[in-house]
Length: 287
Image (spheres, rainbow, N blue to C red):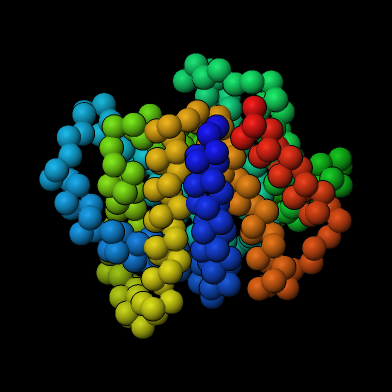
């Protein structure tokens, strides 16, 4: 990847980790997630309406945009519910780790991307590093008792989210070159807006939550929308195998912020995980 693309993906990973920390701190992660998605959508609506009427979008591009929109419905539902019921330190590394594992496979066998050996090694390092930074012990994987405990702790939800992330990333890559990145995210984040309307009609408290917490929602809403738009732009200029995997360097930022703001332990295992992620990111960006 070029230095420019490397830097903007790093910035995207940074602001992505910031809104994820705020999500973890929230009392109701699902409600918070839907509200920041709605807030970001509203903030970028004027520009998106302008681009909607001044841009030409091919039928093929729109099909992939619509597909990503549908998959995002599942993403918002499953992620919010998983964060509400299970530990983020387990859900996040498994979900992101699985997507890192799948994206190079999609890139090579579906998109016919040519990936260097060093970059593939880098993808594996990032995958392994993400697993290490979470709360997953190797003991979970070496005994029947450990596997049962792992599955009860939400691993099925995490694997489902990882698959969803990889699928919408594949659709995103296919659409990225034919649409403005901000307009693309505006379309996909409409799924959060529709979920907001549905839950407002069902529970009658979403609008009150939105209006009373609007100032607290602006920054994470802006970051959620912007971090995604930056990745869409990166997809239009480089390989899915590279950009989709490299963006997971945000796990490093997330671990650092969790230590600073949430008081989470910075264990030797987590430090090794960060080392592998940084090493993997360097291999991808250089080779």
